[in-house]
Length: 211
Image (cartoon, rainbow, N blue to C red):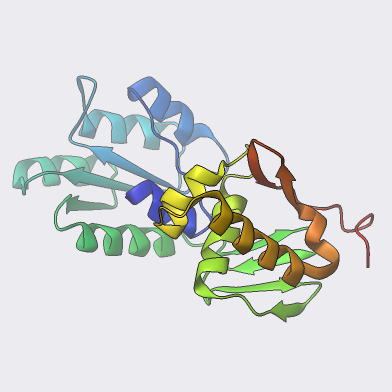
């Protein structure tokens, strides 16, 4: 749920299997927030937080635990974490994640420029060459999902499951994609269909995009 929530807001969530992968993610220039459980493959959360800060990570670190633990909370905050939250209820956790991203100030932007297409997640608006296009809630969610996963093909089944929450399958997805492509106008080529495989959003080069 958390991965889907962040992806819909234009972020690219990554799951780290161990402390070594988490430290590698912290060194990546575009990483703005790291969620740390109370234990990562045997490495205490406080140790991991210290390692990230020692390596120069300037983004937000949010430690997540299944239960309230005052001693753990004190330890991770002293080690460099910005906040401590319980994993339940999930609505509260999502609110804390959103707050942590806002505090990351300047390390991320909720406005994404992808060639002639600009998406503003803060007000759920999309623009083509400065002109806002009218998208329904579902169309905006589908477009931003493809943008968030633009490094790969996304199948109709995945879109139906993760975005539309529907069992209608390929026909319903095809109809929504067709409407979005029409509304993108001269930028429609950015939304590609690979027959039999799925869909992909590929940002157009502004200089070479049709007008």
